[in-house]
Image (cartoon, rainbow, N blue to C red; front, side):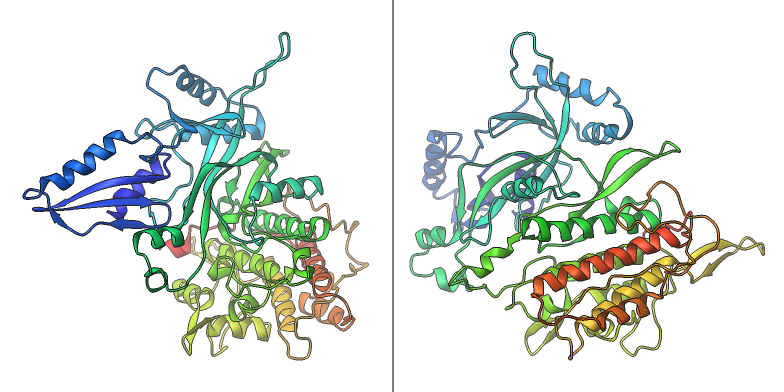
Length: 557
């Protein structure tokens, strides 16, 4: 039943659905929506056919909306001219980096899936198979489409609109208190503040009166039993929501080499820092899927150049709400579990800080490197589980022992006993029987050395959550200017390999000595952002990066 309902919601645009389940001589009626399934007790439909007849009689008298159909979504028939327009756009190559969105759109035109036109804030968008979807009805209901925007009406003689391929997000957003708001409203403020590396809002809206309130439904179906069924007692309500943004991105795991991976992560850290600094907005849901590479043009050799984007701001929080009189922080974890900071994992009752998101981005970097770059681990899956997943302590979830030891000690250990550290390799091809020889001198080792020096200081008992400015001074012997905010992305650094102007551990430790304990936590955390930005910028500018260091997905073995 769950599988069937999940497939219905993935392929159709519905608020709910009715299903009849037959099991021998017994039947069940099922009402499924985006929050729960309600199943009637079994009844013998052969000996009591009047019950089934009553259901179908009432169902036949329902309007399409009462049956669950979404009136803002229209199925495109086989002879609909808009299908031909979609095929025409998909088969017409675009220039440069813009062709990426066209290729993604073409890949969604699957005749086995229904094609629709969706209305968002009065504008029509043509979609086919979702690029991202879930068939598990109990998972977070969200779909992502590469959509074709229909040209808007224009005045006589005006220039026609060019085909516009955009990203359309169809989801059910959580509402109930001031903590959650429309993601499009957050993006609009980020765009107005000039924050780079975040999606550009096109339009957004809540869809009609499509709402789900589990508590009210339980009160109606099971009067007086809601607390026993919904044991958390949560007052959860969802509203159907659509948002359209301009950029169509690429998953970060499609990076071409380690240098491009670090460049994308650096862009996302800058976006997160600027969102806090310029707009006072904290992301709070850092995960690999919420970081994207967006094509911006072609490099000197004709390759596509990407920048990193920080997406999915639906759990974002405005930092100034914490200063409102009477503010109470609700004690629950926010974000993706594996990538939460040590602080957020172990203290869900305390507000998330900007440094927690920064730490999460660095956990994401480690996850990508673990999967795709060569290293000295033999049992990768064991380390992945031991580091990223939680443990139970006295009935409460907390960070794993390995994660806590690495972050507090400042060393990226492979096991809890600290007998060895994780090292990444640049790969050289030897001359003896063409064997691959690993040299553990990859520049990302120095990045992690600096990162874990920061976390060790962050979690040291004497400094508590203090993370002061870590501004670095380039060595005078290094060639050329050190422009930290404009690191080149088109070519690998050639010549002799250099360490960072100062060793990363020494660099960060020295600057921690200049701490200013009187600064506000948010300001101190943003200083840590600046330090990590300079750490990654120096690595990109000065280190010699391998040209072909990406492997197959080692965690998929």
